[in-house]
Length: 272
Image (cartoon, rainbow, N blue to C red; front, top):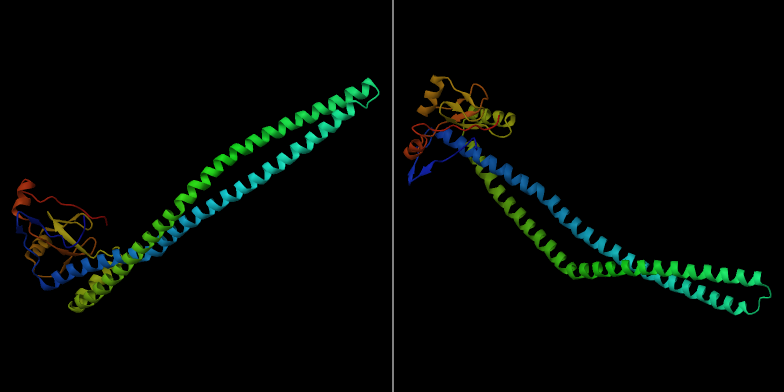
């Protein structure tokens, strides 16, 4: 629940507004300051939001390039494995030819054992080649999918950056207008009221004004003394909360609000 400037509207009947001129100015000043703070947060967040988008695109491109590099390395390794198989096959062929040239059974068995070892080596190489082929299929699909998404991703990031930049410019324009309005409002206050407002705003996270409801300050949720409460309801001066020092105002509830609340206006508190 905001601590300032709530209008109650229901069934077309507006609640009575605070009538003290400076109090009305203070309430509007608070609304303007809160909006300026909101716009400033939006403006200040824009560069990091744009940076996040650029990082997302950069990460996407880097991952895409890494997959392409891995695919290229995979293809190179498979060619090397194929060349290795051919080299081993050549050795097997040579050793088989040499079988006919050996002169002893011991030499013959040794040659057969060597051929068997080479054939086992080929099976291992072929198993490794199959693994690389499966990896290549997965990488190829990832590369193709990323390539298909790339232009869309660039367009998405570009559009979002444009939207953020447009929103930032609009926020800066609105903030500039509100700052001018703020200066006018502040100039319309007496020195004492303006200094009170600025001092309390600095100490209360920018919220220097609070509504009084059911005898409670909604800024700190502390019950007001009856005399203070009555003086605030009379709307004939600038009064502050004895607990949180916020400038207080009171708005008469609309009849339908009273009926809905069973004859009493519910109070709501704003964090101190």
